[in-house]
Amino acid sequence: MKKAEVIRGKNCRIEKGVILGYGSLTKLREGYEPTSPVVLGDNVHIRPHSIIYNGCKIGNHVHIGHNSILREFTEIGNYSSIGSLVMCEGYTKIGHHSIVHSQTHLTAKMEIGNYVFIGPKVTTANDRRIRYFRPDITDPDQGPIIEDGAVIGAGAALLPKVRIGKGAFVAMGAVVTKDVPSFTLVIGVPAKAIRRVNKDEVVEALRGDYST
Image (cartoon, rainbow, N blue to C red; front, side):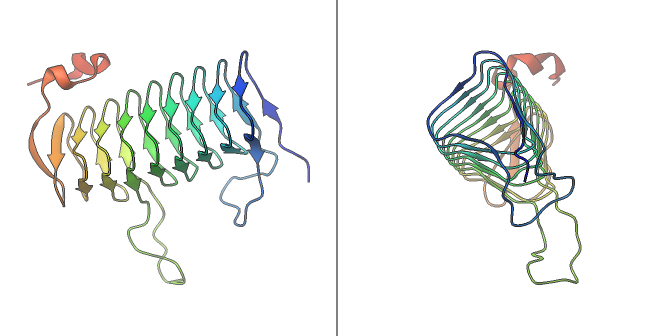
C-alpha cells in the first residue's frame, strides 16, 4: 500500500514518537482514501506520541499536546491548540484561535468555530439512537455544533446534534440536551438557561455582535 504524503510547512517541530499519516483503519468511512495526505501549516508543534491520521489538515501556529489522536479528516484552523490526551474521532472541523483542553473527547462529524474554549474532560456524542447491532436504525451521525466564541466548561457533556450558539457559556458538568441560544449561560443536568452572558465575558472578536 502506498504511504500517504505528508506536506509540511516551515519551522514545524515534530517531537519523538509522533506518527504522521496513520492509515490502518478497521472500518473505512465515507470519502477516506489510504493515500489522503496530511497537511501541516507553518510553525506547527506536535509533542511526543501523538497520532495524526491520513487526511488531516492542520493550520499555521497550531500546538498539539502529548498522546493526542486526530483521526482522519480532522481540520484545525490557525493559532488553535489541542491539549494532551485529546481524542478526536475525525471528520471534524475546528476553527481559528480555538482551544481544546486535555482529556477531551471530540466525536466524529463535529463543527467547532473560531475563538472557542473547550475545558478539560468534555464529552461529546453523535448518535442519539444506538445502532450497534441494530440494523433497523439508520439515523445519520451528527455531532454537536459549537459556534464562534462559545465556552464549554470542564466535564460538560454535549449530546448529538445540539447547537451551542455564538458566545454561549456551558457550565462545568452540565449535560446539554438541546440547543443553547447565543450569548446565554446554561447550567445543570439537563442544562437550563439562567442568564444572558455579560458583554465583558464575550470574547473581544465577537463584542460587535453582542446586543442587549
